[in-house]
Length: 395
Ligand SMILES: C[S@@+](CC[C@H](N)C(=O)[O-])C[C@H]1O[C@@H](n2cnc3c(N)ncnc32)[C@H](O)[C@@H]1O
Picture 1 (tube, helix red, strand yellow):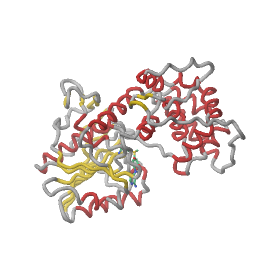
Picture 2 (cartoon, rainbow, N blue to C red; picture 1 turned 180 degrees about the vertical axis):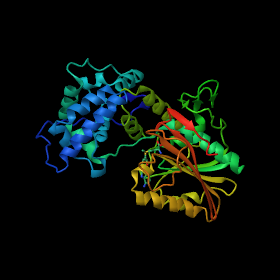
Picture 3 (cartoon, rainbow, N blue to C red; picture 1 turned 45 degrees about the vertical axis):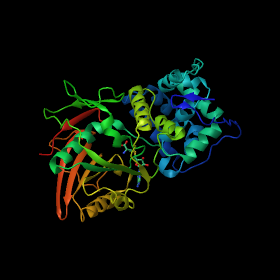
Picture 4 (tube, rainbow, N blue to C red; picture 1 turned 135 degrees about the horizontal axis):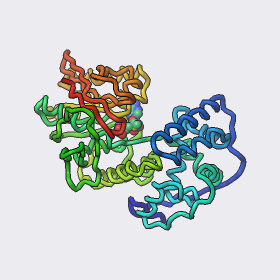
C-alpha cells in the first residue's frame, strides 16, 4: 500500500505497463506541438526548473513523446499535460530512476517514509523517455482524460488586500464567491500568514502557509482581514481536498525545482482538509451558474465576486459575457467584482491602465457596481503567483 503524506492511500494504482506497439500517430499540428515544447524549455530554464527544461528540449524532437501528448483533447495538447501525467505517476509511487531527478518526488517520498528511489543513471531526458515507454499505458490514460489545473494560494497576497479594501469601503461583512475556485484554497485566505517585508507580517502566526510578497512601491496595501460571513466557489472541475487522487493531481501540475510552491500547496490542502466549515465549491460554469449561486449570499453581506487566472482561459467573447453576468447581479444589490488576470489575455475584461507599465504583470482590478453606477480601479500589478506586487490602491 502506498502511504502518502495525505495518509494511507485508499487505493493502489495498478501499473499496467505494456511496451506494445509505438503510439506514433500522425497529426497536422505536430510541428506546433514541437514548438510548444521548445518554448516551454526556454520558460522552464528562465523559471528555475532545469529538469523540465531538459525534458522539454528533448521532447521537442522526440516523435514518440509528441505522439503521446497528442492523445490529449485539443485544448490540453500542451507540454504541461505530459509533464503532469508523469509527475503524478512518480508521486503516486511509480518506480523508475527518473524519480531521483525530481526534488518534489524525493521530498514527497521522504515525508511518506517511503524508500528513496534508486539512483538515476543517465540523463534526465533519457530517463523521462524511458519512463514514458515503460509506463506508456498509464501516461496515455492520464494525458487523454485529465486537464492541467492549479490553485495558486500565492495570489491571496493580492486578493486579501482587495477584499479588505472592499469591506472597508462598504462597511459590511463580505459574501465571497470565487469563480474558477479549483480546490477552493483561495477562499481560505484568512488561514494563511502574509509577509510583506519589514514588520509587515500578518495573519495566524502558526499557519504553515506563509505568503511572502515583496512590495515594489512606497504604498502599502491594507493589512487587515475583512469579516466574511459567506463563502462559495464555482468550478467546472472542483477538486475536493479530501480526494487523494484530485489533490495529488493538483500537486503533480506543479514543477520540480519549485519546491517552495509544492510545499505551500501541500500545506494549503492540509489546511482545507482540517477546516470544519470548508466553503463549498459547486460544479458549474462561472457564467451560466453565477446568479444561482450568488442568490445564497445573505442580504446582510456585501457581495464580492472574484476570479484569478480563470478568464484567461475564456475567449474574449466569453470574457465579455462574464462581465455582463456579474453586472446583471447589480440590478438587485451592490456588487464588487475583483479580478487578478493577465490584461493581455483578457481583452474582454475592463482593465483600467496602470500608473506605469510592469512587464508580465497580472492586473488586480476592482469594479464596483451598484444599479446603474460603475467604478473601475486598477488596485495593483502583481507577479502571477503573488511573489511581488505594485500596490497602486486605485486612488
Ligand atoms: C488556472 S486555474 C486557477 C484557479 C484559481 N482561481 C487560482 O487562482 O489558483 C483555472 C480554474 O478555472 C476553472 N474554469 C475555467 N473555465 C471555467 C468555466 N467556464 N466555468 C467554471 N470553471 C472554469 C478550471 O477548472 C480551473 O480550476
